[in-house]
Image 1 (tube, rainbow, N blue to C red):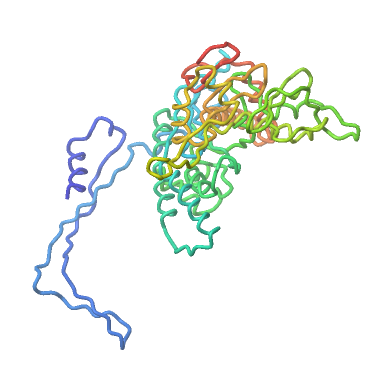
Image 2: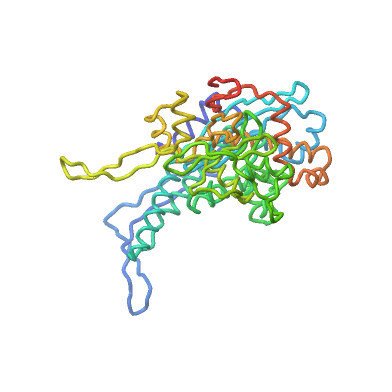
Length: 462
C-alpha cells in the first residue's frame, strides 16, 4: 500500500530533516486473508463460521518499519538541567504554554542575567477547531437539557478531545525540540480560562508527559506515559522535559509596566469605619452600557474597573480586583439574532459594546471593528488585555502575554530549584508574582514583541 511504501522510500532516500531519526525494518511475516460467512446459532448462543470457497484467499507480506530517534532524548531532562543551570543560567530556552478559549498560546524566551534582558525568541497561538467544536457541542447539549429533550449517548465530544490532544501536543513538542528548551505549563486552570469544563481534560492530557511535578507523577501509568511519548528506556518524573507552576495572576499581569491586579495586596489599604479592608472610589470615569467604569486610588496609584451598580462610599476590597478584571479582559464583541425584513430569515449581527474596546483599541487605531470581530470568532471573547492601571493602559494579546508570564515564572522556578533545591522552591512559594514584577521592572524585554499591541508608556504601537 502507499502507506507502507512511503516508509520504504524514506528508508532508502532519507529526507534531510530526518537526520536525527533512523528507520529500521522489523521481522517480516506472511498473512492469509480468507472470507467467512458468520451466522448466529441462537440455540447455542454462539457464532458459526463457514468458509466461502468462491473467493480465493489473499496472501499478504508484512514488513514492519520502526522509526526511532538516534539520540535517546533530544532535549535536556530535569535532572541534568538542574546541575547545569547553576553555572549556565542564561543557556536555556523556556517555553510557556497558556490555554485560551480555542487553543493554546506559546512563548519561547531566554533570560540573560548579566545583560538584564528577556529575549522573546518566538511566539504564537495554536488554534484548534476541535476545541471550538467541543465548546459549541457542549453548549448545544446543555441547551437541549434545559429544554428537557432526550439526549442520546454520543462519542463526538470524546473523539474531538482525543484529536485535539494529539494536535496540540505535537505542535508544542515541535517548538520544544526546535529550541531544545524546557516547557512550562500552568498548574491549575481557572474557570475563566477553561470555558466549558471539557477543555480542562485536554490541557491536562497535553501536559502530562511533559511535567515532572504533576500530581500523578509517582504513578506507574504516568511514568509509562513519559516513556512512551518521549521514546525513553525509562520513564519517571526526572526524565520529563518541563514542569508546571502556579499561574495565579498571569492573565492579569501587564508586560509593559510589570504590575498585576493583585498589586494592591502588597501594601496596607484603607480601613472603613468598622476597621474592615475597603477602598473608596474617587470619581466616576465614564458611563457604558456594560456599567460604570470607575477609578480607584490607593497610595497615588489609580486602577480602573467596571461596576454595574452605583457604588457606595466604600467598596469591599476584594470587589475592586473583580471590577478591574472585567476592565482588563473586556468582551471583544457580542452578537444577536436579527430578522431580515426582506426574506424573513434571521441572521447573526455582531456588535461591539465594550467602552474599553472602543476607547483603548479602536480609537487608538490598534484595530478596526471588522478585525476585532474576526479575532472574536477565531480566538474567543477575551483574547485582548488592556492594562487597568491608569498611568499605563497598554494593550496586548492576552493569551500570548499570559504564556510569556508562565515562561518567566518557569525560569524563576528553575533557578530557585537549581541553586537552593527544595528549600529554594519553598522560599519562592507565594512570591512568584512579586518576583515576576521585580524582573519586568529591572529587565528589558527584547526580540519578537508584536504581541504587545500598544505600548502606552512609549506612546507607540509595538
